[in-house]
Length: 209
Image (cartoon, rainbow, N blue to C red; front, side, top):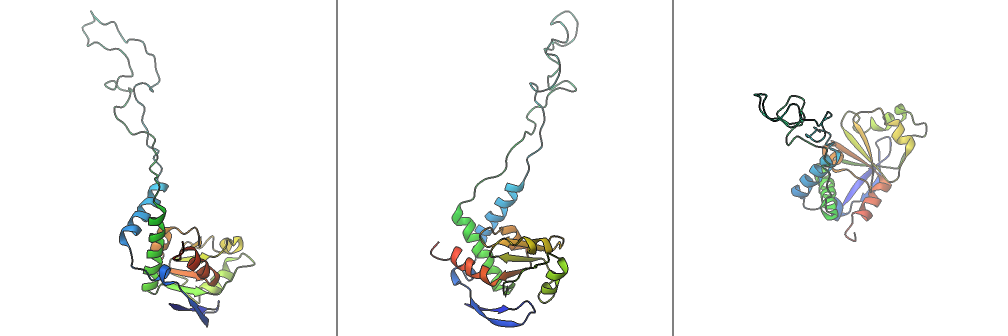
């Protein structure tokens, strides 16, 4: 399928082909769910931790003798029944991350791109950069498209100056075509894809891969 390519001023220049196997597939809700869940799990920090009876600081001496005191026998002050003692079955440091099969992740990305295309939330723009690295230079471009909505710009290469220009725009994210994140794509209201990035996406996520 073909889609119009716009200049930085918003005018239409020409058309470009969007590969059907990338931008027009049957949407897989299941793969999108698993990709979103995987990314959130990989970001999760399992930092909750408690000390067991063997980790509590203190003497290992018996608090009082076994017999003759009239009190219940006790062997250590780190016992969980004592105040300041260890915690029974408390949380420990853990890693929640796990690997998602490559085919599932690729299917999820293509499904999200197809969903955004179906909803007409994708715009193609000619390759551009912000040579000065200033935000106002980038805003001149964005105002011709959708400056007030949560936008993801997909690049064909890392562009330090362009990223610098958009660093303090809270509704803007930059992604490289081969390092797309499902969460950013799915929750982004609009996708602004550079012309060369479209060609890269067609190749990278195409049927031959």
